[in-house]
Length: 227
Image (tube, rainbow, N blue to C red; front, top):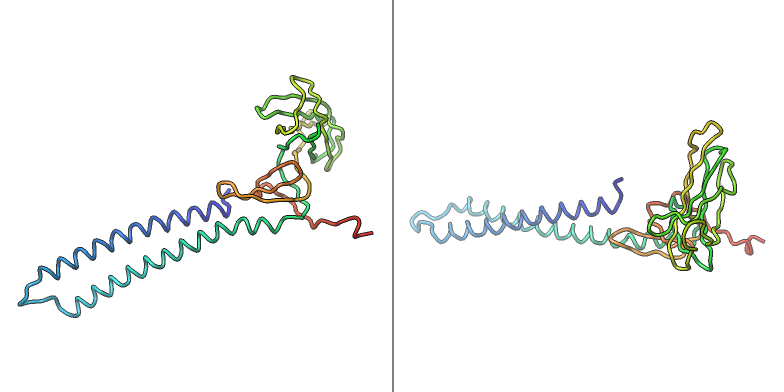
């Protein structure tokens, strides 16, 4: 998927490449022009019109170098603006297609969505190494969004530990045994943002999710103010 970060990086690479070529050509041009002036025949100097044209070319190359420097500054500013843009999401309620979260106070919570009613739906909690530590029936098998909270009690291996990252997986099937579309989601209010390797990440509850995984945003409505 091509995103704003990829586009910015590609643009910066092209500008750097073009600037390097122009700088090289500029240095070569100056060397040749200087040599021409030093070795010209005093009895037959360089034609003034030709010399003016060469100086005009040199000024054009220099101007292009300055333009590229300006473009580099603009690209850098655009990349740095990613944090400012992401910060505008703080305070909003978000839904992200993301399955990893930290356990806190002995619990880890997720949401999951079913595209149709399922005859069977199995949930699996995986630890940071990808090993299944808990498996069981989904609490709801009807179409739509549902919440699930794991109490940290493992059915396989060790119980969950606070501060550790766990992820949720769902497998759902209809009465005919065919797979039902399903996805694990992270939902909650955005409380912070940070940049990592040029990509914006949002803090949603106990999860840190890439901005690119957010599929829905809503203005937070305080029940107290509504009352």
